[in-house]
Image 1 (cartoon, chains in turn brown, blue):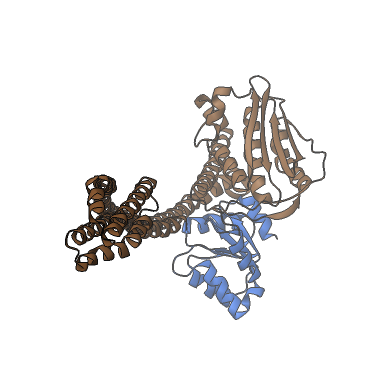
Image 2: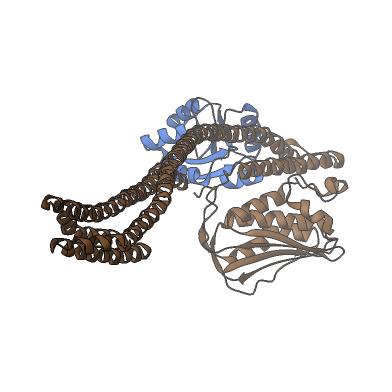
Amino acid sequence: MFKQTTHAKLIVIASLLPIASFGIVGTISYYEINSFLDDENWVKHTYQVVGQADDVEKSILDIETGERGYLLTQNIAFLDPYNSGLNHIQAQLDSLRTSTVDNPVQQANIEKLALLVNQKIAFVNQTQTLGTSGNLDAASTLVKSLEGKKTMDSIRQVINDIKNEENTLLDKRSEASKTSSQNTLNTIIVGTAIAIIITIISTIAVYKKMKQRDEVDKTNIELHLETEKLKERDNAKAELSAMVSHELKTPLVTISGYAEMLRDESVLGKLNQEQIHAVETISSQTIKLERLISDIMDAQKMDLKKMKFSKREFAVDDLMDEQIQIHSKLMNDKNIQFTNTTREKLTIKSDPDRLNQVFANLIKNAVDFVPDNGKIEINAARKNGDVVFYVKDNGKGIPKEKQDGLFKKFYQIDTSLKRSHGGTGLGLVICKGITEALGGKIWLESEVGKGTTFYFQIPNNETIDQNHKEV
Amino acid sequence: MKVLLIDDNETITEMMSKYLTAKGHQCSVANDGRSGLALINEKKFDVVLLDLAMPDFTGVDVIEDLSKSGKIKDNKIILFTASSITDGEIDTLIKKGAHSCLKKPVKLAVLLQVIGG
């Protein structure tokens, strides 16, 4: 599930990234182009202002030229440009004013210009009035006074200032416009390139992930097949084990049967003491061999997790009393003081047959290790809803360094003890397997020279390890 | 007691019949499931010791057949097995009419006790 989410996420991100990067490139380009167009408009505007300034200059020249022509010729036709100039000049000044409303320098220039223009017009009108009234000499003197020329020079100067100002601005604006167009170009090229790279990376990432997923799918299928094979092999192993166990036990039936018959004088006659000893040895060794086969089978089942369990509610004190009954003969034979010190009345839901098996193994071990006139104590007590059992002996104890290996297969504390104790080396492995399969645990406390206590804690009503089948 | 021993292992049937005869029982022997079933259908036995794991016609097949024919109630059939048969499987056979089950190897004294007399 987790993997699928990651894949879906990756694909969404991989598709959205290129779209997003193209979107960003588009947006930036849009603003760049707008700003470029804006700069272009400003360039146009500059030319417009320069043109307007030229118009003003032309009108003032028309006024002056018309007036001079009339004064020289007295021909009224020369007054046409004069009148036309007068008619247009105020409107032209207004246009200029409006165009440069955002530029205080130009506004000041224009105010200066307007003043000079009015001055010039007043001067021209004065000359004109003198001329019209026939006072040509006075008019001529006025013109010669150079006052008009001075004003005209000032007008030209101011107009030049206006144009220069605009030209300076034009340079700036052209530069900005150029930068703007370069930026736009750069943004589009670089942005598009980045977006293409992102798209390629996304595509590669998705492709790789898809390929990886294909591989994971493939591996999963292979693993599944492998698991099936292993399961088959386990089943074959279990079947083989069952068969081997059957085949090993069958001859034991005859061996132990005949050994028993030999000891029974009513069947095959009386034996002498040595013969009896031989037959008894055969019997006891046969029992050990049978126990070994059963233990190997149990350990094998534990390995293959085929051991079967059946849980039921039962009284723990019955289980404890049973231990005393089952083992009392052995304890009497060996002169061992065997006691059950359980005080609580307990019930538990677990598998009593398997717990019997654990007790049997632990008690047999204890019997093997206690000295003559030894003591073995069994107990059960409630602990946090679980039941803790123990088997305590006053044997020679187990040194710390040997304790770890105890629950390993075919481990025996001392190889020299093998013959005298005759354990299979599987008892504790089976005890551990059973307690763990029942959801519990097993451990020991031991002190050399004082004795050993094996504890096993079994939970109540605990679901059995799922790997183990419940019957 | 009339005892029928059904087991494909001849050394086992030989040993057991010797023992049981020495203990005063009358023993018949069959070394495969089919001849055992034939003997049960032919004669009346007090006790039948039936091995489960036999080739071709198993002890389970014998029980099935006797259960179908209804003759299972006329015989005290004791299952006798070394195979790792589960308690559940034994319960099924006992429900079908088998008397009890002994696991191999068994002490002859215990066998004698179960057969009774």
